[in-house]
Length: 425
Ligand code: HEM
Image (cartoon, rainbow, N blue to C red):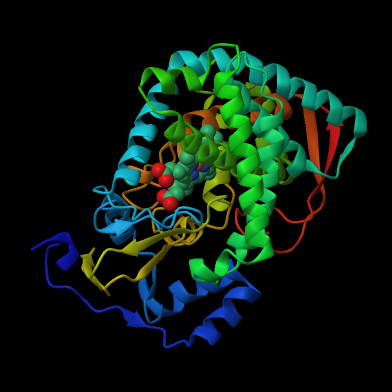
């Protein structure tokens, strides 16, 4: 039996529960409140439901774990918008090159490189704190955190090369991509390429790629790009990796940072504890004080910026005891899992201390995903969040002046219309 005929699993397979929604009905509910809809679909229909024919929502942790573990063979990462020729299967040369790029990135994120980056991040965070303290109100917190995050990545990536245009061009590409990605409908490629919004995103991507190529040839040294060159990556693969990483390190970490500041504002006891711990030395492996690590983990549990993962079943599959229809789209929501997995008592409560002795099981806690396509930037993301929580938490006392009732989930989950107050501590 080949994977395409139905992946290996043990025991008899159960059919999925059918929600019986039409495509139009699904969209109506989904567009009104995406997170609320997914939570209520899981509560109403259980952990494995076929929302409409061929669209499956999985919130059974064991099944989720399996899907993510079997990614690149039985479940595929749908090709990104501009690379429809990639199957996402391990056997295809484009996917193979991407996996080679991932391995090189992981080597480049070794502890010495991260330690060297910490001082730069700390100095930058102190400047941000000083600016915010002076102003007292931060009406564009998400934008400013995006800028922080994008400049952190550019610095980590390009070492001493002058990379100031790359963050702006990355932001321009991301802004151009939002209207393309936010829609639940993806038109077939042949039609899509005529849409003005699609063409705008193509030219934004070209502008970023040409800047990256210029930078790769520019004088300077150090940074992740040297590690990619040492690993023997060719220029095209390097540019592809850098575009994907630049996009992934722009809005997603900024969302996590913004949610963590909202949490500090709403939980002054946690803010005081983070502030008190902020001066402590990092642990031997560079780990932050416990309360900072727990606050980070709890923030990512309640507000995972990447709130929806998607896979395409490669033919019919059996997974966690469930029968997945051929070529189905499988939706996995860390937001839903983090609020429904039994390991989290009182799941709606923000309680960082729960992490003192909490060990989630397979598939229960997924802010960075798992399996062969999990977040390759996690070490840098964790470091950035710990530094921001420590420095901003030590210097400032936050209040939430304004926040929208529902998060903005067009792509990354962001606090909507956020305005923070920032006073000296
Ligand atoms: C708090 C911050 C971050 C969170 C919560 C996060 C979350 C995630 C998640 C859940 C995935 C897996 C998606 C999937 O399985 O379909 C992912 C993938 C990815 N992340 Fe992150 N991420 C963060 C920061 C970063 C940073 C800073 C970088 C780069 C420096 C990065 C680079 C990537 C890349 C390149 C992928 C795609 C991996 C692949 O498809 O092989 N991420 N991230």
